[in-house]
Structure formats: C-alpha cells, structure tokens
Amino acid sequence: MSATGGEAQHPASASDDISLWRTLAAAGPKATAEALSDQDFDRMHIASGVESFLAAKVQAGQSVILTGNAGDGKTHLLRRMKPALEATGAVVVEDATALMRAGRVEPILDRWQQAIEAQRPFCIAANEYPLYQLRIADKESAHMVEVSRQCRHRLAYGRPTKDEDNNGLLVVDLSLRNPLSASFIDAMIDKLLGDAALNKAVVGSSEPVARRNFELLSLPRVRGRLRALADRLIALGYRATVRELWILVSRMVFGRLGRGDFERSDWYSEALFAHDERFDATIALRAVDPTGSSHPFWDGALELRSEPVRGGWALRQPLASPHPTLEWADFAALKRRFYFEHERGHEVFELADSDASEFQALLQGQRSSGPGLVAKLVEAINAAYCPVRFDSRDQHLYLWNGHRFHEQPSRSFVAGDRIASEQFALEVPRLPMRLDGAFDYHPDHVVLTALGPRGKPRLRIDFPLWQTLRRLERGLPRKLVPERDIHRLDAFLEKLGAELNGERHTIWSAHLENLELIQVNLSMDGRRFEGVRIYD
Image: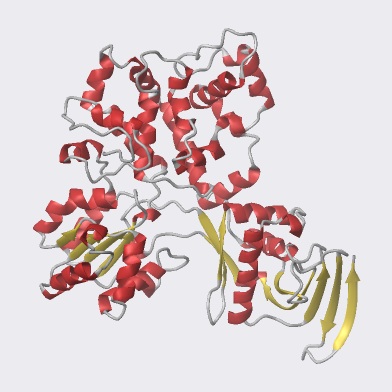
C-alpha cells in the first residue's frame, strides 16, 4: 500500500519480509491500494462469500457494478477477480475514475456499449459520484434505468417484492458491507497473525513489541471482547473502510514503530484507542472506549490494585504503576486491558447507556419489535409536539402542524388527523433477495413504516434518533431535542399527511409554553363540535 502526502513510501515487498505490515502501521488516511503489488494483494486478501457470489452471477451472464465509498475494497476485489471474470468473457474495468477523461464518462459508456453489443457481461468498480454521473449521462438506456432502480432500493424491508429482482444486471453497494463487523475484523487479525514472514520475525528477537501483542491478540477472550466492541459500534451507527481497519490492526501489532521495549503505549489496547483525527475509525472508537464507562466497584479495584483484580486474567496481570496512585493515562490503559483480558472485564459496560443496549438488541433480533414497542415510539413522536400526557397518546399518531407558519420556532401545534398505532410496523432492514448470499449485512437502523393503500412512508430511526425518541417518552422537553431530529419528524408527519388518510374525529391544540392541551370532539360526520376538554 502506498502512503501519499509526505508519508513513508512502501518499498517493494518480498514474501520473507514484514515491510508491508510495518508500512501499514505507519500509513495515513491517503494510503492507496492501487500501488500494491500482486504479492502484497495476496498477503492482505481476505476470502469472503462476495467473491463466489459475484463469480456465479457473471458466469450466468449478468453484469456487475461495484459501488460504495472510497476504501470499501471495490478495486481490491475486482482486481483480484479480474482474471477469473475475464475467463468467462466479461469486460472488466477496475476503476471507473481511471477510465474517465477530463471528468467525462463517455469512455465508460462506450466500453459498456461495446460489451452489450458483444453480449458480454460488463463489470466495473465506481465510487458513488462517478456512478451518479453515469446514471445522469445515459438515463434513458434500459440498463441504466435498471441501475438507477437498484440504487433507489439498496435495502429491503418486509416481504420480498419485484423491486428485489436484478433483471440481468446487479448493483452491489459495498458500503453496506460494514468492515467493522466482528467476522471481518477477526479475519483481518487471523490473516496478520498467520503471515509466515511476520511469524518468523516475532519468533526472533527483532520484534519484541509485536511478539507480546501477537501473544495477547491470540487469546480467545481478547478476540471475543473485540467482537463485542465491533457489534456495539455498528449498532451505534459507525462504520470504517477496509483501508482504515488494516492500518488500525497493523498498529495493534506493532505499537509505536521504532521502539524495542513494551511500554504502556505499545500495548495493543492502547494502539486501538490512540486518537488520530485523520481517521474516522479512531474517532468512532471513543464511543466504546471502556474508560468512558464508569463502574464504581471495578474502577476502585483497579485504582487500588486490590484483591479482585489480582487474579482472573487471561494470561498475566499487566504491570502496575510503581506510584501509590495511578495517573489517568495509567488508569485508562489498565482499564482497557481489564476489559479485554479479565474474566469479568465485560462488566465495565454494565452501567453504560441502556438505550444503546436496547437498540443493539433490537437490531440483532434479541428484542421484540412488536406492537408494544411501536406504541412507545408513537407516544414519543406525539410528545415532541405535545408534552401534555393524554389517554390516546400511544394509540394514535397525530399529524401535528405548527399553529402559525411565520412563528419560528412554533410554540403551539394543532392536529386534526390521526393514524392508529396498529397501522405502523417497526422493521429491521435486510439485503434485497437479489443480493442474498453476497455478504453479511449488519443493520444500523430500523424503520417505522406506515402501512397504507397509497404508499408506505418510512421514518428511518438510527441510534441518535432512537435515543431522542426514548428520551421524549421519558419527558425530554422539545427545546432540548436536536434540530436535526425535529426536522426528520416534521418531514415524516408531512409525508404521512400527503399519502395516507387519517381519522378526523378530534381536533387537538397543544401549547408548549403553557403546557396546555385542548381536545375538541367532533361528530361522526365532522360537521359539529360535541365537546371540549382542557388538559393542564
């Protein structure tokens, strides 16, 4: 992997050296995969189901468009598969951007049209923007219409529909394959620990830091705790590129490059959580750093180095600071090692945010997404517009509107239409049937779907919005709700009002400052008032 922007350049690697891994450990965010040798590609390659999946589709005559973010592994995958794909007669373009001329996509379209005329599958890797340019430039062609359709339906909800077919062409969005998944990180570490050249180096005396980290990263308990962190990160909505993770895993093995001891900052756990603003992954790791979760019992035991933490380690107890009390950096390092290596280390997260644990359980199917939870979410949305509790706040979603359009922010809301909670379903996304078996998809959101005859408006609920809704249910004032979440709720209610027919038997008027709610009951035909009730 080359490291650009003034960073160390990668020398040509040989099968018996470890320069590849050391260069990865020193690489920055501009490191690129294009300059890797075929030998280095083989050493870094992690076999996955997506290869056999794509090979079978192309063998059957289907074209494939690999898309996603930079660093998601598109070029790596297509470069490795190119000989086999070409052997089936496919036309392969490893990088759409490299084929473009002066930012124009015509060379790509010409190559694609040639493949169609020759009745050969066409395979290309394209980042999101070049793919968007292709869709705009050739939007009338049948194959590009199909590309656009699949791009609009990258995930599926509920029962399979015809939108999940592929019609001889397949768009595979590798950004849906979150490399933070536990299985992918496990495979990366296994690849590194199984590298023959690296094993040879750590057996000798030239890499004492790598040798110790090798030993610790091989422990089943450490690996299990790493997997738990990965699952937690995905549930919170974080992701990382393959490139970032290779750099991070390499750093976990080598610690600080150029040192021959094994000081605290060389520990694999410190390398994992070492902050580096250049990498999104290290920023995300703050959210699951064991030091960010307080546990009075274990924090006290670690600080005093008392009896409960003198045993129970997977290998050996980390050396304690010689000082009577631990400095923060020493305490943080010890707590991280405690999480990974102590038999009760998982307990450091026992007092962590319960909303996060609940959301993770929902995504993983360990918590019901049935009517009870739907009713709670409906009540929470209503609470964003009407803080006063009333009898049916969880039974119907009211379509609230600001009382005066020019009044910003609105201090009062009115609702005439409502939709019963039974008309909503909480759904966890999945891959469409056309991508079934391509790779493991780990959802990072759920959707609240309105089931109506004219459409299915959906509210996408990621962890930040989930947390807001749960807090609204518990009484969070509207003025403390993040503006981004208010906008999302407003848009959802507006879409519901446009696409669904609600019930109009009651008019509700809520005033936020006075904490007052007025309920006006209408006759069944909606033509006269039959009663007024004031809540306060």
